[in-house]
Amino acid sequence: MSWMDWIAFKHVLFVHLPIAAALMAPLPLIAAQRPGRGIKPWWIACRYVVWAGVLGSVTAVITGLRAAQTAHLLPSGEFIARGSFHDPGTFQMHQWLAGSSLVLGLLTLKTLHRRREDHQGIGVLALFLGLLWSGATLVAAFYGNQLSHPVVIKTPVSHSVTAAPPKVDPEASAPLRAMDYMSLIPMHVEPVKSIPHGNRWIRVWANAKAADAYRDGKPLPEGSLVVMNTFEDRWGKPGYEQGPLYALEVKPEGKSSLTFYWPRVPEARRNETHGQDRAYWRDDDPNLKSCMACHAQGMAPMKDRSKWVVPKPKPKTDEAGTK
Image (cartoon, rainbow, N blue to C red; front, side, top):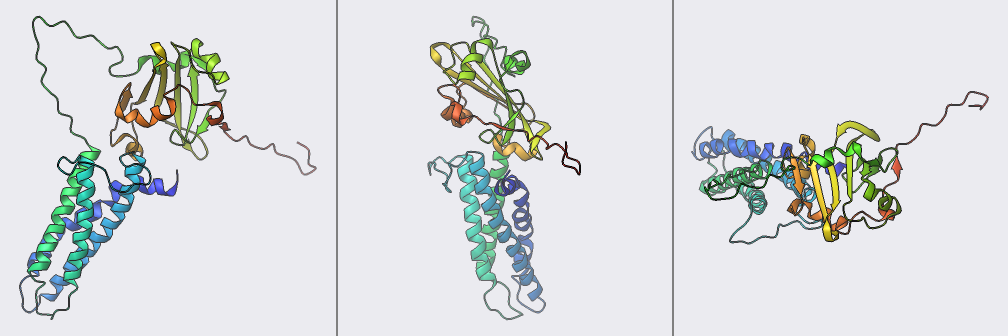
């Protein structure tokens, strides 16, 4: 994991500073309106609180952009979400409000640092801008929470007497065949490291129809099933924490069907699943769009397959140089 990715994973941690500052700011902003003796400590407190919030907002914006690109909410190289102004999505609202909060915070600081006598209050303009900054920060945090914990609305199902019973999908809650991957033929003697799959250690398994075609790098025939289990990296070797399970099946007419299953997503990795603590994506799920870009025609070419295995320890030699 690169240091930029590590920082992106900490975006949820960094946003707590501007949120705390936005919650505390209204009290000193209102208290600093009264002119008179002893008012200076209040507008100095306003400066400290707003400065803390603005610096925290800068860090949150930088890490948020990286986190959005890692989670594929933003295309690589872009910094502003594309969306309709009249019907923005949750991520667009979060990004626009976060940017507005940063601008309002800077304007508030400018008004707070205007020269004034020790007995003068901060003025109505500083109060107005400060409250706007506080509100924008808290609403941006609300939309950020919606991204991390999406609300699922269940629609009522009408039951008709004459309606046929619904068809039961045996894999509706979990990819049962893919989870039985150890009954398939292993394509790797040992795990190899794959950068495109989250820099994890992987091992590929295939059924009898797919085994020969996979080894030769040929298109998979109809009825093929290829499953890849993964392990998180731990000090340059496969760790004890299992990663997601991937499955590729070739259906009639040569159409590829992908499955992504992660029953328990670690908190540090939830940016890869848009904040979900459990992910089960398959078929035409929009979250598999980036996967289909590489696997629309089946398996990756032989030249793109990883060959990075666990490094073997060098044999020890004695003082005479013999093993």
